[in-house]
Structure formats: structure tokens, C-alpha cells
Image 1 (cartoon, rainbow, N blue to C red):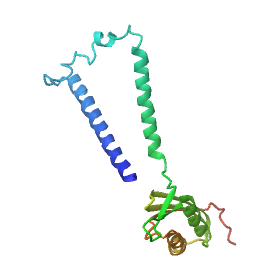
Image 2: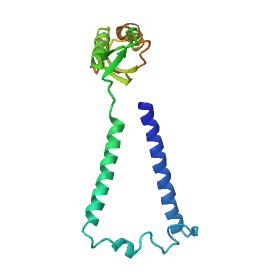
Image 3: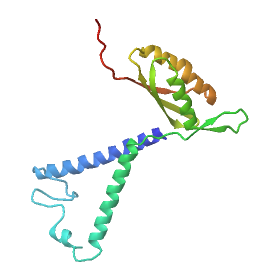
Length: 195
């Protein structure tokens, strides 16, 4: 689903960008004196996009302004919805576990996240951990955030996370693979005085 959303976003943004560049560029070019083709929406430097008659045509009708305001409100709400959708993390609510009988079973995503967190926090040098499952329920992916203690070695911690916590979570859910993105952060601490 994430790949489809990314593709749709690119197509929509590309079309909107192309429309704005062509429209704005053509108005700018005509304003600078370039002679437009005969079929273009305005003829030259002195021409306007909307004449006085076009702008005032519906002014006296009682339905005009409510319709304009409602249409602009819908456009703004759709734009805000799209913007929020870009930043929303899609948490996986369940994982499909292959039971071997062809049916499968569903494992709560939060349960698998809890296994990942408890396994990561049990590692030496990890102060705090957080996990988030994304992807599809038949092919989950994980995002793990680790806050490391000052004495922790990032490389060794990543190796142990992969060999222990991720392996345990993968085996408990019966998954062939669990692609994981790990973000490391160090605990803030005071500098130690050496004498």
C-alpha cells in the first residue's frame, strides 16, 4: 500500500506541477509580449483572463457565493487531508502467521512490537527501545528506535539486536524475514571528569 500511495503522490504532484508551470509560464510569456497561438485563452498583454462581464455574471445570484465558498472549503479540506496522510505512520494492526494448514492465523501487531521492544531493551547498553510495524500483514516490516547508554557499542548492539531480538520476533511469528530499519540515539549524559 505504501508503494501505491507513493506512486499516486508522485503522479498527482507531477501533474499539478506541470499544470502550474504551463499555466503560469504561459501567462508570464504573454505578459512579457510573446504572441500566443490563436486558440489560447487570452490574446495579448492588454487582455485579461476574466473580463468584467465574466467576473460579475453571477454576483446578483444568491447561490453564487455559498457555492464558491463551499467549493474552496472542499479543496482546502482535501489538501489538508492529503497533507496529514503524508505524515501519518501506517501502523500494522495484525500479522498473518503461516500455520501450515493453508488458513493461517492473525497475530496482533502490538504483540509483535512488544516482543521486539522487550527483546531490544534486554540487550546490554540499550536504555530504551521502541518498535513500529509497517508494511502488509503478509510481509511486515519493522522500525526500531534504540536509545543507547554511553558505554554501548553501536555495532555490537546492532549485531545482538539482529541475532537475538529480531530473530526471536521473526521465529515467534513464523516469518521468513522481517526487514527492519533501526535508528540509534545516544542518551544525553554529563561529561565525566578524569583526574
